[in-house]
Amino acid sequence: MSEPTGKYSITMPRDIAEAARSPSGPSGLSAYVAAAVARQIERDNLSELIQVAEAEHGPIADEEVQAVRDQLHQVRREQANGGAAA
Image 1 (tube, rainbow, N blue to C red):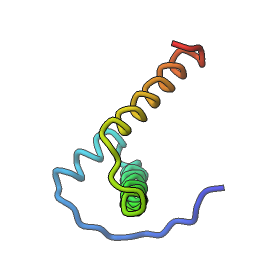
Image 2: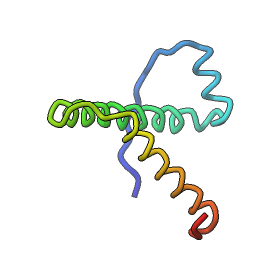
Image 3: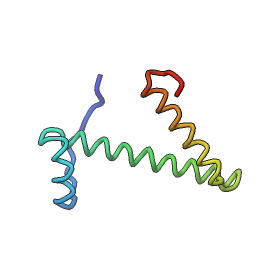
Image 4: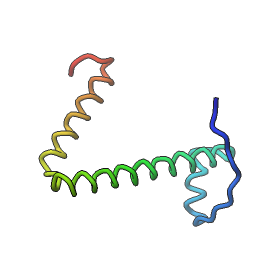
């Protein structure tokens, strides 16, 4: 079941709207914009979590960030290979 929707009027630069309309088609612009806003909300929430964690535990070291990136890349490689270890 899909989420209830509402109709909203937004203002944005024409070039951005046209760039968004191109890959989504005329009828898909709303879905494209909704997905972009949802991603931004996720990023905002993640930034807030990072700030709270760093306030409690100190800054996250670059090495720790790289280790997690490496793990994510490994998982993606395994998924691309049908779940087999790369």
